Length: 312
Image (cartoon, rainbow, N blue to C red; front, side):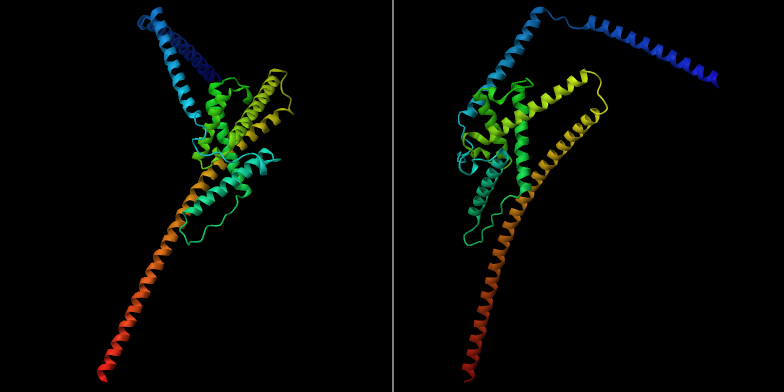
C-alpha cells in the first residue's frame, strides 16, 4: 500500500513540474506575440494622446465649475430661509436642535395639508413626531451628510484627514446646497434654515466622524506594525468590527423603515381622501333618495285628495 502512495506522489509531483513548464512557455509565447504584433506608438503620438486627455479633463473641470457657480448664485432657489438658530434653539445641543427643527418642519407640513382640506370638513389632528420618528429622521439626515462627504467632497479633496473649516467657502456653499436638495427630495425641507445652518452642521459632523475613524485606524495600523497583538487586544478589535457591522445594519434598516413609513403615510393620506370623497358621494346619494321619497309621498297624498274629491 505504501508503494502505491509513493507512486501517486511521484506522479503528482511530475504533473506539477510539467504544468509549471507549460505556464512558463505560454508566458514566453505571449511576450513574443506582444512584441511582434503590438502597434508601435511614437513619442509624438504619445504626447498627443496625453495632451488630449489633459484637455478633456480641463474641459470637464470647467463645465463642473460653471455648473456649481450657477447653483450657488441663487442660494434661496429652493425656497425662503425663515428658520433661525435663535429663540427656542438657544442652549440646545445638536441632537436637540435637529429634533426641534424636525418638529417645526412637521408642523409646517401639517398646515400645508390642512389648506387642502375642503371648507367645512374636519381638519386632521396635529400629532407631534415621536422619539422614534425623530431618531429615524435624524439618521436619515446624517446619512445624506455622509453621502455628500464621501461621494463629492472626498473626490475634490482626496486627502484622508481634512477639516471642514479649511474647505474654501464657495465650495462649502455648493456642498451644503447639494445636501439641502437631497434632503428636500426625501421630504425634509432643511433648505428653510437661515445661513444653511442645518446642512453646515451635518457636514461638519461628518468631517469630525471621518477624522476620528481615520485616527483610530491609523492607531490600529501602528499597533499591528509593532510587536504581535496580545490575546487581550485581539478580542477588542473583533468586537469593534462586529460593532461597525451592527451600526451599518442599523443604519440600513432605519433608512428602509423611513422610506416604507413615508410610503405608507402617503398611502394613508390618499386613502383618507378617497374615504372623504366616498362619504360625500354617499351623502349626495342619500339626499337624492330622500328627495325622491318626499316627491313620491306628495304624489300619493295628491292622489288621495283627488280620489276623495271625486267620491264627494
